[in-house]
Amino acid sequence: MKIKIFVFLLPILLVFNVTNCGTSGSSNTRQTQPLKTIYKDYFLIGNIITPSYLRGEYLDLLTTHYNTVTCENQMKPDALAPAIRGGQYNWAQADNMLNEMAANDILVHGHTLVWHNQTPSWMTEGTAAQVRQNMINHINTVLSHYKGRIFSWDVVNEAVKERINPGENYEDWRNQLRTESGWFKALGADYVELAFRTARAADPDVMLYYNDYNLNNQRKAQVTAAMIEEINNRYKAEGNSRNLIDAIGLQAHYGLTVRIDDVRNTIERFAGLGLKVDISELDVEVRSVGGSSFGTRKDSRLLDTEARQQALVYAQLFNLFKEYKDHITRVTMWGMDDESSWKSMGNPCLFDGDLNPKQAFFAVVDPNRTLRL
Ligand code: 9MR
Image (tube, rainbow, N blue to C red; front, side):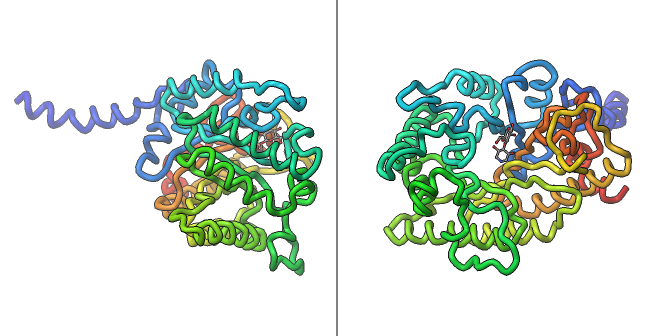
């Protein structure tokens, strides 16, 4: 008799267990399993952190749902390197974040070493030889500080022009790099390869990424692929058995009109080069308000129809990412919630400004259910 009662109760106990295993600060997400559990057989699930994410409900949400993070700004050159030539590196803030993440078993992806933005101006000033040495010193200093603690880095961020227009000659990738970059001005197109070679020599255990946006534009994807392929071929022709550029980060700052087939083509193009293809900065903006989507606006509310459309996009994207799980190691969102997001006016995140899960959250939890509704 006791056994019969137990068999009868078992399914109820199991359902209860599944629906209660989340412990996030937001009570509604307790209805689901954590995202990192749902996707454990597919890829890591990430978000960004800033110092203000390291407490209260934010930290609860982070530790419940995510198993990898990227520091939003705190490991960029202007955060770590001294503002003035010859000054001290500033490790305290990023180290604090790294320790907190280690205590919670959350992996940290490094962002970023060489970029045209958020970089102290002295680094790219002087003769070509000086600028070259500045880059080498910066990469060596940062990788040796984090040795054994950070396993993947965006080595070069956004080197290719923002977009490549139809009709433009994009045969040679060297002509399609951002000319406003201080690194490009001083060193020409060779700075990209120099950065990767320096990083590999500084710490061969680190996975090296090229990270960029607008890669659904197939012209930009083609130029970027040509750049990576040439650099990797040269490296392998020297007898190296692995690629120099191990992976690409697709920033994935999308809107409602994103075409899933473009995302698929882009993933296939880079996977075809033998690269890991990670989704490094995912958000799906619903609308731009007054021509700009930037700003922190808690009162920028979503219409129900918009929330639904956004959920459909997230659902299609995650189904696609699952298809490519053998190539994708990490899907990282660029923002926890619609208030703190860099694009808060466009409500691009899974949680609203009060940290309640949106339809978009449930779409990531169960894409097929959202698509069937
Ligand atoms: O989210 C970041 C924002 O807080 C900064 O003001 C901005 C300044 O450059 O950088 C944002 O992060 C960017 C990331 O580092 C690289 N890809 C684009 C991201 C959004 O601009």
